[in-house]
Amino acid sequence: MTGTLGPDDIAAGIEALAKVIRERTDGRPIALVGIRSRGDEVAERVCTILAEDDRELDFGILDISLYRDDFAHLHENPKLQGSEIDFDLNGRHLILVDDVLFTGRTIRAALDALSDYGRPGRVELAVLIDRGHRELPIQPDYVGIPLETSRNDHVLVSLQGTDGEDKVEIKEKTEP
Image (cartoon, rainbow, N blue to C red):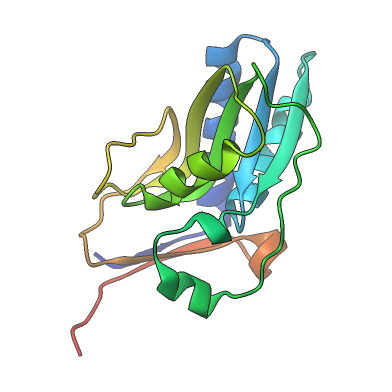
């Protein structure tokens, strides 16, 4: 599959995430923690929408670089940016946020990293794009855009704050 999603698609996906989180959490206190990089921007945009509600809402950023099991990623992105979680996670209803859910390995690493910050009462997963093809038994609780892809497709997400534009490109992997 090849194709592109534009700014309107991204905005609609973020709105969909905020809407379903709002409905399912019913005004209860929550904390959104975005995974660097791009999951943090998705979480921040969802937080901006949810901030209109009268509820306790915290926002944090989680850097999982040292928890990944794919060392090639560390070679490509050696810069550690650090986490920014300035609230107590213990007992909290936490929603972990990422841009794309694929194999589940990033989320596994994020769960390991979160354990260094405390023990949330509940952890749920929100993703802007769910593209399927899991390797681990990890499923999202909240999805902005379900996307059908083949296992070999590349899903390249660009977001305004990180990359200067909102778009998703789906490119078929070609064998060398």
